[in-house]
Image (cartoon, rainbow, N blue to C red; front, side):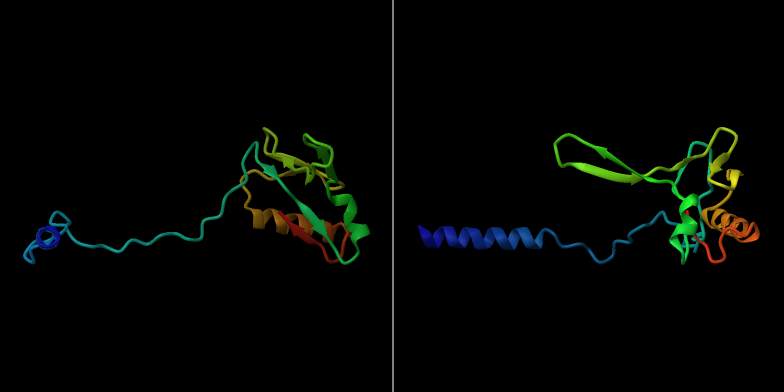
Length: 138
């Protein structure tokens, strides 16, 4: 009986594996006209839009000089006794495309990239002689 079951299992395996063979003369993707290379623009950079929330951090060799340009850390409690978190408040882009940046005032940011905004704030800080070596991260 064992030998018969073994022979049937062997024949079943042979039938199973031989039924999966693909004929060699089948051409795949018959309806494809031809292959064409397409260029993909990989240099995409997002633009700042209304209602975006921006995190802008200004740092310098002297942290005390950069402090007025940064929003404070806000601590808040969630649930239990020792479960708290800290986060930096962001700058909400207003309906007219501006943010209110400390010391520098209202800045129009809509339509700029992060890099352009970084360079703009850095230039203003240097031109108005607030910082000599600002590092701005948007």
